[in-house]
Image (cartoon, rainbow, N blue to C red; front, side, top):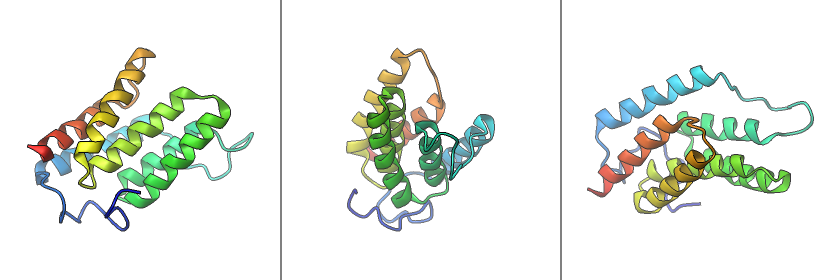
Length: 145
């Protein structure tokens, strides 16, 4: 878990140089993405826990500002995706983890993580949540100056 991640929220800006406008835009984009995808937290999924549901739980925690829980969920998603042989979902988890790092003052680590995982996603022909990830990537660059 990144240093200082525990208990961080959108309202804790002690280690972040993000502008309030970027943070508002990021939150609005996140809410729109959740509503557009309509993938809600499902604690018990048919056939056992599936990578898609795990990604949705991680993303929901991220959007709610519960970065520590989002970080834990992405670790679980990575393990589950590996177990089920689902590289698409592992990449999704990497993107969410990159967002966690970017939004908790670890922009230098997050930028490469988000760029690499975004490239992997594009190579599959999907644009799932791409605007959100690119917005967080831009936030990371802005934080670094």
